[in-house]
Length: 191
Image (tube, rainbow, N blue to C red):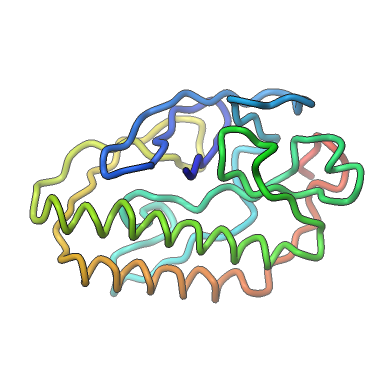
């Protein structure tokens, strides 16, 4: 399950073609984070790609499925041993993979592949099962603290949607292949 976390916002926890909305609250980093997703920053380090030909951009990824957040690690013990970044893909942050600073590009690559998996299992499958349905409200994460209702239409064929998901992943891998960050050096501080 991908949980794209943002500071004090409602986000869609996308596990099937029917999203469930959950409220996540940012807080000071804590040693125990089970069941919540408090992260130190409202934005991630990896970049969402854009490609007009395939119909996605920075603010509107396919199916409204954003990249999972790669940002500062909120588990102090992990941060202390040099794994200063975390890819937030689970409500229990202790289940999320953490990375050392030199591994930012690897972490972004994993974020791209996670987004791809969700794109196929939610968006492409939605196109297969719901085909040509009009847009319906869908709450998704944005870079701000306010939730945004986006209209998600399942208007592509399954194959067309899967092709778009593949292209979005390729563009994501390409734009993030040399990612580096000087953030998160001090525990609990993004700058």
